[in-house]
Length: 166
Image (tube, rainbow, N blue to C red; front, side, top):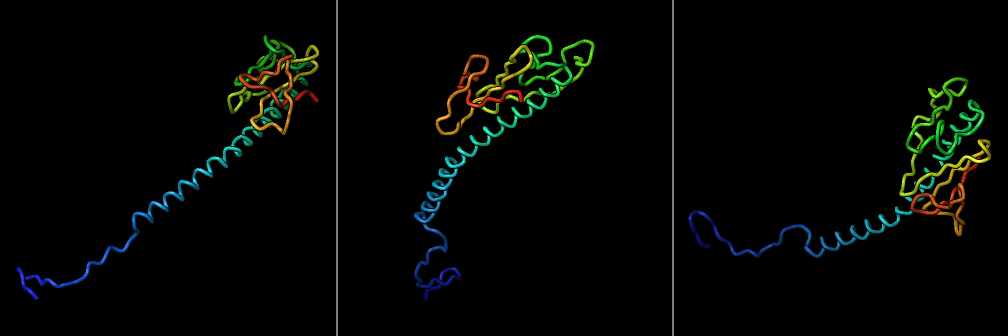
């Protein structure tokens, strides 16, 4: 043994640090990335189905408000003009006097489509009926498009879901 400045130098073998090698870390990272990629694609279908369910639920909520509106106003709201409604806006009464007052709010905020489409409303039969249409991201296998007011367009996409007055 040699003495040098108060330190003892010994012949010893070098021991590597106790941890993971670079290859082991790269393999683990690759597996995590692969699992994340699979989950992203797997969840895309679930998100589409959830938006479709929301569309159907929104339309049923609007249907309920339309039925209350009809019971007060004796007809469904027109497509445009006094007493009409817009998706994203409110649904109010149509008369300044009587039992269907403009101060009555049947729906504070009419829902809008959660995706890139739009909901479409069409009064039929001179106020005795209506149609509400929506697109679906995952229409049932081979589902045909539906028409609302003579058109099958729900914004930039085709309509696949339709609800009419009971």
